[in-house]
Image (cartoon, rainbow, N blue to C red):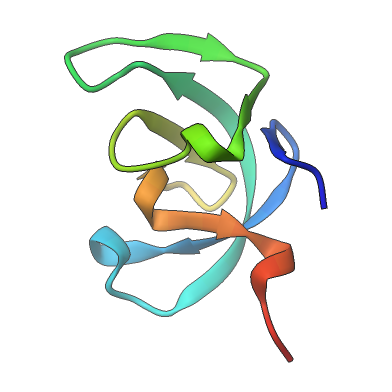
Length: 78
């Protein structure tokens, strides 16, 4: 597993502010430093920075999410 979240990655996303069951989604855009308004668009970010509301992403399922609503697909235990 890579330590970076990148555009095009398949991740797990939980809707309703993280309260719904996780579903797969693909990252379309990543924005960092967006806690106090508009942030900066980037092509990748270290997963350690994907916490709280410091990172937002736009997903291929017509939703967007804060960092606390997503996690790497590799975290799924079967």
